[in-house]
Image (cartoon, rainbow, N blue to C red; front, side, top):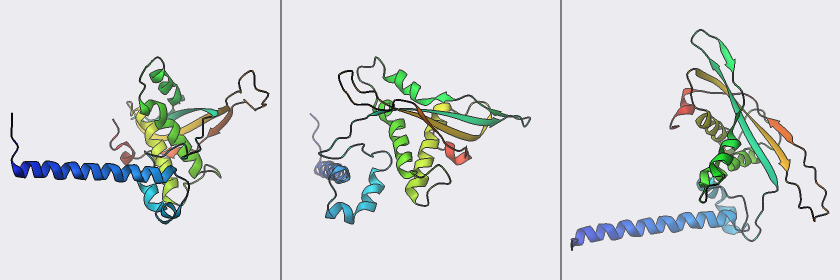
Length: 208
């Protein structure tokens, strides 16, 4: 059996303690993010948001879960330019349908397939409640647009021609209540089509 030297054990113990402390700190941030508002969360709201958004944003609050009552399907399309200058607007690419296909019949579906696109759209609607014009002045509004744009570009891929612009659309419908319920809801589909967003070289950075 291998025997670790004292310096090696000290390094391992220090690294383990650092990893444990970092994990506890991260969990503490997420706890404060979903907990009812208190003096600590009010004082450090900017720091908490910087850690939680956008990848770790939660769709519920502690002690008051918010079950999904709407079905949102997101699609995207791109406008490309060929070498001869010909500009083509491609058909809509069903982003949500791809997630549904990946999750269906999978006993252990990926968290990304289940939540990445859905949470990105929720994040966008929260930061753009008044319309789809230029990005909100605060950093969260700009981040929401960039986050949604990069997800769409990653799903569609660069293809053979240079991508000029990307556009997204979401169709939202309220889930019908069960047959035994007397609740009356509007189950018609409401569409929200976003403006075209220009695509630059840096938008592809890090996308596989």
